[in-house]
Length: 456
Image (cartoon, rainbow, N blue to C red; front, side, top):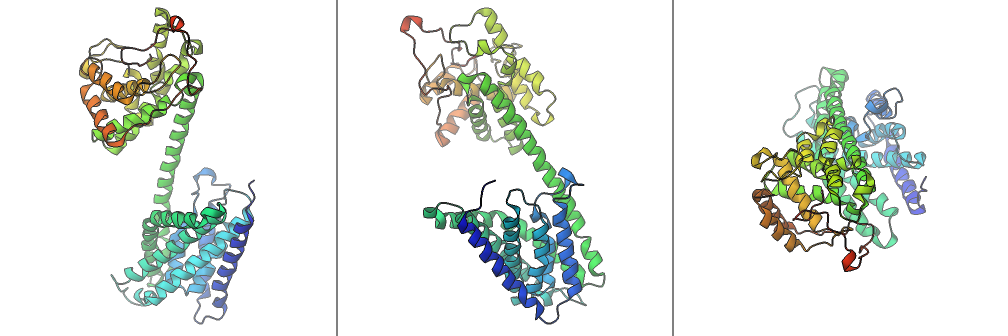
C-alpha cells in the first residue's frame, strides 16, 4: 500500500472543507425540497454502491462516471448547496480501487460537492431552473444553454481538481506543469461524455417537473445504464484480448531471447503499412495482432533450436519451419483474431511459390500474410541478433525492393517505403546484450536467414 504524501493529505483536507462550506448553506436556503434531495441522494448512493456490490461481481460498472446524469439532474432541479449535498453520500459509498480507502473517499466527496456547487451556480445564473418549465412546457432550445454551461462547469472543476491532486503527489519542481497538462488533458477527454450525461440529466429534470413526476424521470436511467454496461463489457473484452496477446508474446520472447521485442516491432511496422494502404481501423487493429503474434508458433519449437548459434541442419530447419502451423493451431479458437490467423499461418509464403508451409503462389497468399511478411523481413534485417548485425534501414529497404515480385508483394514494399519516409523508424537491439559476442572469422556461424535476412 503506497502512502499518500503529506501535500496530498493537506489538499484532501482543504477540498473536503471547501465541499462542506458549499453544502452548509442548505440549512438556511429557502424553498429546499427535501424529498427531492433525499430521493436523488439515495438514488446516486445506490448507483455508486452497485459498483462494489458483491452480489453483482464483475457485471457491475466500475466507474462513478456512469451515474453522473443523476448528479446533473440534481444540479438542474435543486439549489446549488442541495445539489452538492446530494452528491456526498454516493461519493462516500462508491468503489475505491486503491488503499488507503478513507482519504480517497473523502477526496471524492469534496470534489463532487465542489463540482456540483459550481455547476449549480452556473445553471442558476443562466436561468436554467425556469427554462425547465415546471407546470408547463420546457423552454427548448434555450434550456440546452444553461444545461451545457452547468455540465461544462462540472467537468472543468473535476478536471482541475484531478490535476491538482496529481500535481500534489508529483515532483516539487514540476507541479505547475503537471497541473496544467493533466487538467487540460482530463478536461478535453471528459467534456464530450459529460455533455452527453448533461443531456440525460436534462431529460430527467424535465420529466421530474412534468405531470409524470419523478418515476418517469427514473426511467431515463435504464437505457443509460444498459448502454454504459454494454460499452464497459466491450472494453473489458478488449482488455482481456490485450492481456491474452501480451502473455503469448512474453512467452515467445522468453523462449527465443535473441528476438526479444521483434513481435512488437513487426506489429508496429504492419500498422504503418496498413495505414499507408488506407485500411479501415478495425482491420488495422486485427493486423496489429497478426504482426505481434506471427511467431507465436515458436512456442512449439524446441528451445535449443531457437537459441542455436551455429548453422541449422536440414532436419532442424524443417522442424523450425513448422512454427506457422503450430501458431495457427494455437490461435484457432481465438475468435477476435479473425484474418490475423491467416497471417500467422502464411507469413513465410513467397510470391514465387518457394515459401512454406504450403508453397502458395501470388494472390493465393492472403493479404495479411503478404503484409506481415514484409514487416517481418524488415525488422529482422534492421535488428541485431546473435548471428547477424543490424543493417541500416536504407539497405533493408533496398533488399526488400530487390526481392519484390519474387518473394514479397511489391505493393506492400512500396507502402512500407512511403510510411518510413513519412514517419521514420528506430530499430533496436533485440538480444540481451547491446553488442553480441563475435567469434573469430573462421568460426563465424552460417547465418540462418534467407536472402532477405529473415530467420525461419
